[in-house]
Length: 422
Ligand code: URA
Image (cartoon, rainbow, N blue to C red; front, side, top):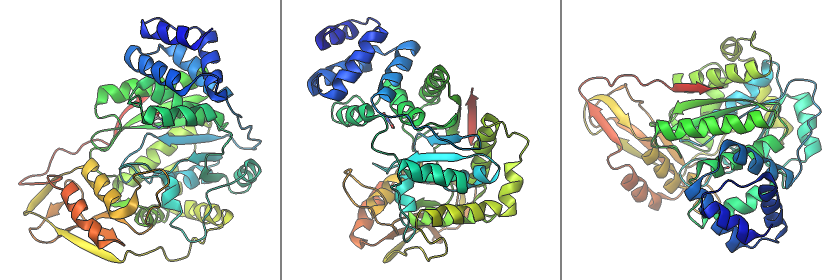
């Protein structure tokens, strides 16, 4: 097999054999296939696609490029992955909730890039909290606390790390087989027996249309099933931010409200819906996550999870140096608050990063004082823009142009969970 043959065959619309796929992924990881050759192959895959069997083999080859964790845990393991949204802090209440219900949740997470936030960036706003854990620490914490949210370890799917960086600079990110194999290689290597995927749809999501998101969801479930991981995908709305808080520390504060039995209704509803799917995969469908969440018990698990990673769950969270209030432009009912615009605003205020190596501001973000469907009054506060760098406010306001719509009557209430793919 040569790289040029593999590129030519995919370029001409042929199926790649299992041997060709395994060879090319392995050779690329070792440096024996050049970056420009893999770039050409990624573009050929982008244009020609891969079928379900090719995609499953490609994912397997990326898993085999590194280690697959073997989690020796007494309880059933189940994890959740979101394709990325605005205000999507669901992992924060969900992991301790599902652990409280009896499963073990190994959630290896990433940092944010672009307008979607990263779970690790949010948790790092907690004084002392540490993202980097060894495999031994992960397993110990799963056995003692039941939930761990930490950084992906270096040894998991190194082929994906290399390929994702290459796709990023060659216009080949937006390919469903490449996205799906990238996500699943990392998640399957993590060693969880069950996996729930929250595939976001709408302006704030990677996938802007229901059709694209459905195709991604079916591809993800197909890969999981092919690799023996019980997988469910849920399509959920991302046309408006989840909850009221978008940023880092503000999202942690909102997650804590939810864990204490309060918080915004949409965050509670999605946390409970995803918990039900995870518990079903773990064989624990008799447990009612809504009752456990309302009891406040999950908060105790959260506090143990944060302390186990060096954080102080009782410490005050960072406050912004500057708060800019955006008033409602009219009186009536808030009929739209665009997720993408709010995500970009939070990013410009300092909550996100433009380059992988940039720092983020713990206290930066946007607080939405009203949600679509809520009444608003002209001139009253609608959004709070939080930042340590007041010069960033102008860029955030520019991002928010056209993002808010006020109407005379309430919009039809949109459902949050659009479809479930098993
Ligand atoms: N997230 C990933 O991990 N990989 C992709 O290719 C896209 C989103």
